[in-house]
Image 1 (spheres, one colour):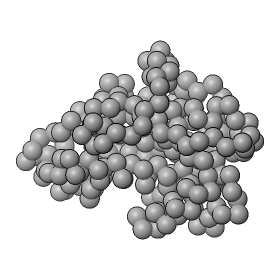
Image 2 (tube, rainbow, N blue to C red):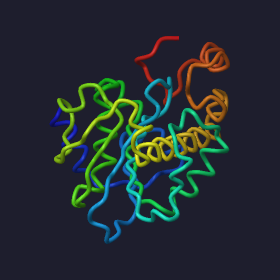
Image 3 (cartoon, one colour):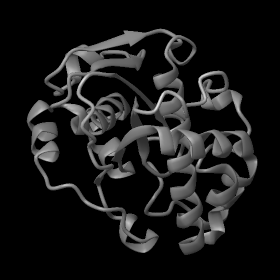
Length: 223
């Protein structure tokens, strides 16, 4: 498995494609331009583990403008409404460097959810490899045994409550993935991805019974 990841990590970065093309894309790394900041803390978190469809997304965040960063308001994205997340993300986006790792449903099915989780985190962190940053992540089971990232990453239970960078990463990853699922819904509207974002709601179950699985659905879940 390590050789698979190393091969994927060596691939050139790919810019996000339109939904009809991205459906078949297995790995995407979206990077911002690296600033001259050389010594900060990078927080990383992921979303999409429990979804039945679509990718798993990790975001890595480094605060570069502490005066503009919303320290008093960031928290775990699951504790925020969509409107609140987006307001905070607009502040995070102008006060941080953000990198994303996106692992498709195909990789999840082929390699397993835990491998895919660590791979997404590794891809997001690659942008900061040459920085002098410290790396902190919300707890990920088996991370140290699976990661191919060359730097030490400290894991924290409920990391979003301990490091604003991790909380910001959870918000960035959630907004990014939600927007992807909304774009997918424009291409395959019958599943309602713009409403449930691929998670197991009753409406999603009914759509699956009516239409079967799409190319975005993970084969490793049962409904």
